[in-house]
View: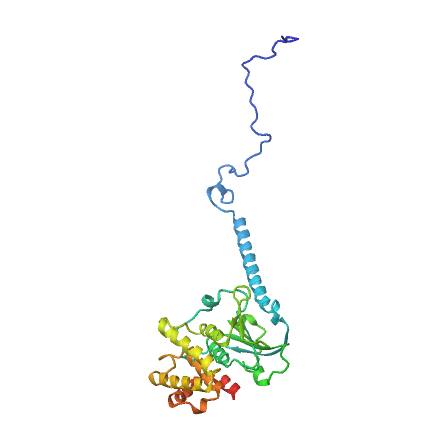
Length: 323
């Protein structure tokens, strides 16, 4: 029972409107009057022009940042590797695309083979021992210069104390525009270094080094022309490349004689080593025949083939280096 009884001050049928929010603000998206201007009609799917300008500016900034990132990654290939202690920059040459016809059939795309790399030069870095000059790569370098705009540079590593002037100038003279790396499509950097095997580095982050002159030659030749689509023809090319490097260049006298007889027989059936078209097999066999010192006593078909290779004009650096 309550202690005090009080009469109600209002009737029970009184309705009170309670608020649904603490503060009320006007709708900033509401249209003023009867106007339907585009800058206020955002709820109808249209975009404010100021927002469009801001988005375009942001896209441009992101594009520049991406190009800067690619350029820094390109520099990191030489700065963050053991090859950073380069002592002497010897030569750099620029070779534009040649208008003359080439004997290589088929076309290749650098973006497809090497990946799109905006803002940074695609630089192929090769470490080679001056005691074993990679003459095959000099021929391929000459072919690359005919196809692309190549920035060719020779360096001497601190592990090598003496390099002949002939090796220092094997890629040609310095070009006056060598500082403008953006003018070139491909970089070809040869470093004379005390290494047990020739090795090539292209992308430090995405690709492991390639070792061996034969394997590097395969990589470079794919930048010039695709391998034969026929598996038998591609296998024949690879077989001749391995035979050249392992038997002609490093084999015994008996092995060299057997390879020369097989080469003479193959050249009796076709113009080039692996068929009617010039291929990597011709580059490898020519260089290894000259390296073995048996070019003067080869059979008749091989002599004719050697002259045909020299008439192409790309084997001069290799022949000059081996003389």
